[in-house]
Length: 174
Image 1 (spheres, one colour):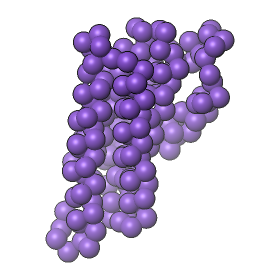
Image 2 (cartoon, rainbow, N blue to C red):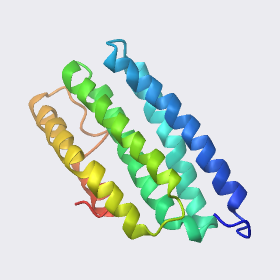
Image 3 (tube, one colour):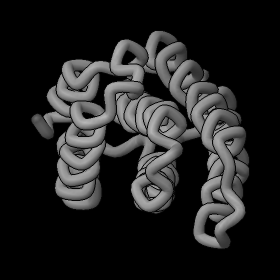
């Protein structure tokens, strides 16, 4: 990034803080690989990625140069947040929760990759998202949808299928 960009310090601060947040969130998700994860960890994870989501959405307004990357970062963070909360809703299905946690680890790795390419054009960033996330997202969404229709106690009002579909379309993946 060039030193003449007046928003350079803000963007650099966002990148650094986001990496700290992602590392913390990944630590929470890693607990599921050790059999120690909890609903509280998923909620905390969702709240953490919500911070990245909100910051990226706000920064899009002040840094047009970085708008493509910030938009995609916000969209991927929104998916992570949604799946984090959805995993809480299906916590009784521990195998699926563990799969979701692993998917979220991949997705947060993608956010880190996007942060490192924050000045790149939208087309190359969308290719990155498409290559890494699309198939995994479609598969896990399909499994979550199946469980939500089979389990009457599942609270589908908190996250609707159309919300995930809309985010996928925004990412150019739907």
